[in-house]
Image (cartoon, rainbow, N blue to C red):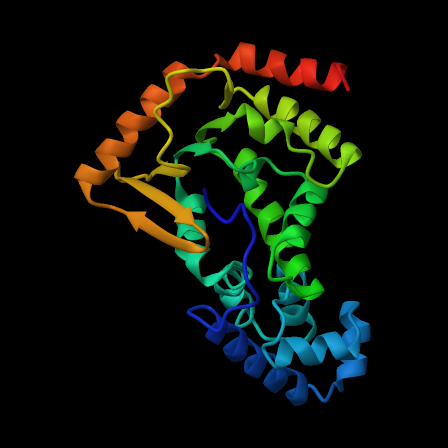
Length: 278
């Protein structure tokens, strides 16, 4: 289901090391140009305390800052070269490999039963999801996670366009996470995304007596080399499945789920009715 349910505090797992490497390089270039933190922050639009956090590897710098820092400090691409790996550190450790594959996928197919797929979430909905997580997340972690989730949505404007499909439980659409206004905004976003030519959204009605998806959420990603990789997650424990027998099982399950769900046209009509009736 990817990282939809939220995550724990910033993990010191694979990926956190790149923040310290980047921070040391940033500090080295800054000191070589004789900027103090306040002056460098003023040149890039950040506070001295934020610059300190970046240099100490305590916060994930956004891509725009990395590009600015590289230019202001005359790093000649050294900092920019680390931008992609630094961006991966925004994700919880258990999702980093899946996030990288997601960016490379030519097709992505997802079934979700608890919350909307992160790729479909509005900023307000995503923030509400992270704010509801227990144990509580730090505010800085919440903001990093929201930014990372929204950054993933570039998949909708990528060229060449990937083929995307999403099946969700009707109950997911009925959950007013974040309150009525956030919920309505999220339904509107589902409608907008569902109208894209390369996207199909389907709803599994709560009244359906036959249901192949009782084993839980999962995502299928087809790569440029023809491989299909499956991703499953529950309570922060995740796994990428590459073995063909397991992937084939999930592919078959997804096909049945799609056949049992409402058609894309029926599904969008259901979302429209939910909006109209509120």
